[in-house]
Length: 354
Length: 148
Image (cartoon, rainbow over all chains, first blue to last red; front, top):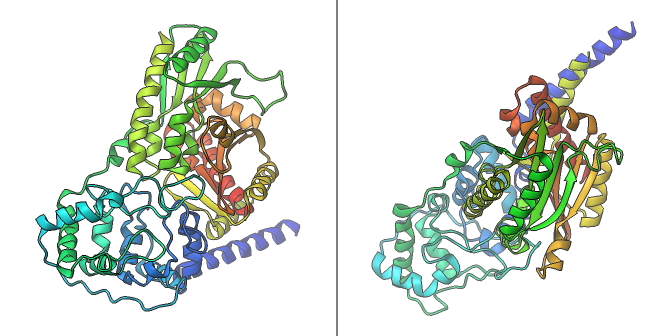
């Protein structure tokens, strides 16, 4: 009887769970809930920004049409942290945009897409004089992510990469022109009309920015995903010698040895740890500081470490593969660091196993 | 019967999890300050049956070296029996053991980041390890849900 009762209760529970699941699919999407689940970890619950750029600034929301926000969510910014959301339905994306609109009062600009025809050559010159100091010589944007508060930064808001294929897909000429004319209050983006440019100058800059479409850089993400998650090398020496070699090799690459410990340290009673897996932790704080400025989420790589493992007399040195992990971050700047770190890891380990 | 409960739990968890996950990363924002979130994190890790083996104070190392940073820590944790079993049967997973959660201050809020452990299933040669990676992933989501 008791078993039957439990079975009936379980089936009822399963039915309820499936109903909840089905309702999530069929009911009108809840923009706030979708925003909190998909966006708030980077952009903040109130849209004030963090790892992601701030979304609640009235000067931002009142200058971008819904289509810009919708396409940004759908396609993201390749290589610039913001991921694409290919699995969200159009209705779900529209409901998220609806929630974003609740962050600020004001009129929503129409999704007008009037093609701006300016002089690209002249626009390039004007861009160099007025825009490149923040947006980069080739429109590559500022360094770092969003407005992250965890570290000191030069600008209150990171300048967007306006050469990014995601940006160019989402932003219309009209939107770029409007932003240049009005600026964005609360950010370093000023009104260039007030700064003395004429409408013709602005048209030329818009056309130059649009020309980035033909030279948009590709990311190396696909290559990264083909990498193995781990680097494993056989050592010619015994475990103790390999650990000593590893420490010397890391020091030779300007890393400070911060800790040598057994893998089980802290997990089992002291004195009962297996001593056949020894971790060597090392760090270069100057490099660490630079990498954290590029992406504050990078702690999953930290501290740098290699593990010496002994199995049946055979000794191996293992480490994470920075190139594999960098693919998780959708951050081209970080990819460059990870390529460097890959070289450093392999140098250190190859030196240690000889 | 136990499997039925597991299915129910999985369906419910998949509907209420608040952490965002984009392929390899699980990111969660807590509206608590760093000390509150850190306490909640370590408490929840313990309540899920794991042991915190170490907390790496990255911010202290950076500050001592002359760099400015807000609170930035890495919490290492695991279950000794699981770690022992995996490192014996699947040593290629060793570089990702013990498990870790990055926790750092973002003004008056706190950000938590972890790896989606299921991505390392490509290294696992046994189905049992793949199931374990799945459970670790679910536990990380559940722990993040506790750090409101």
